[in-house]
Amino acid sequence: RVSQLTSVTQSLQRLEALKAQNEKETAELERNVAQKKVEQAAVESLRKKRTELLGQVSPDILSNEQQLNRLKDSESELKNLLSSLQTSSNDLNDEILKARALRKERIEAQEAAFVAPKILDEENNALASVKKGETENTGEAITLPSASHFPALQNDFSALKGELPWPVKGNLVQKFGSAREEGKLDGVLIAAPEGTEIQSITDGKIVYADWMRGYGLLIIVDHGKGYISLYAFNQSLYKKVGDVVNAGDVIASVGLSGGHDQASLYFGIRKKGKAVDPMEWCH
Image (cartoon, rainbow, N blue to C red; front, top):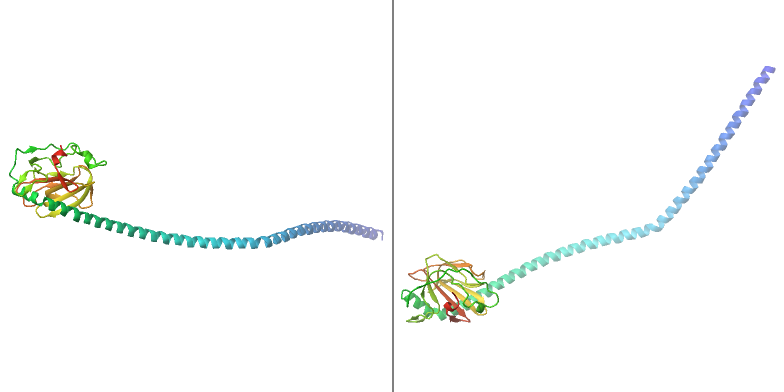
């Protein structure tokens, strides 16, 4: 009996120990649960506050997004409009440039149609006399010097008087004012080998470049302020109406056009339609 009692006592002691251990662990668990609840409550509180804040911010964000989308749409429409306007502007510029070019061509054609016939009518008898008497020299032929310098036209053609070069190297076989049966020569006649280059005496613009009965291939350069220079009986013309030429540019070549037997250049200078002596202008 004593042995049984001892065994029971030991068992009770173990139970008490286990109970104490269990209570200890239970208390620890309860503390952990309480801590978790506190933490969960804090998290929930934060979540609630975040939800409230999001609830307040979301409408503003949505509104801003909508405004941004509208701005993007407007920007896209503006880009399309600008692109369309640019295309229209380019098309308009092209039309304006074409219209200006056409107008320029018409003006140049009108200038040539007005200037050339007027000049040629005034010279008709003189050039006809050149053709008849081209072998009749009134004196010894003068050998013209080669051009060493072609002065540029600065402001006024008249400032170049006496400084201009001859347009071609050759022999001056007929002078300005040479008497002929049908009038006086309003220019000079320069004999030179066929094909010799003819150069513009200074800057200007071509106002006539074509065949003319009695003159062969004729080219006229306008130097501004009523001054022009004329080159007739050419073999070839290297410029066309409207071309801008610089001093010394090759504009034609010496020939026999116009029914002449001797290769030569008829060269004249006009001031507001009146013939002037090239020998006073060229050296």
